[in-house]
Image (cartoon, rainbow, N blue to C red; front, side):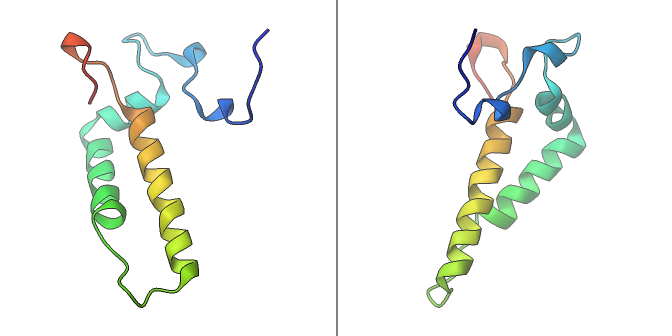
Length: 86
């Protein structure tokens, strides 16, 4: 019996693996359209700054957005030859 820590639901699950061994996150973002979505999220969220006059609420919101984009990127990574991840 495994113990859940409250965040385990956000981890990729093995029960839904495709024939190529990818889970739904990896399958979705491995295609060209998925890669374009990730690049656009990176450009809009990770590669921009709010500026010195941004209110604290905007900074908190941006940090939540950054965390979500980074989580999507982590879940979408797939194994490639040599054990490296992309």
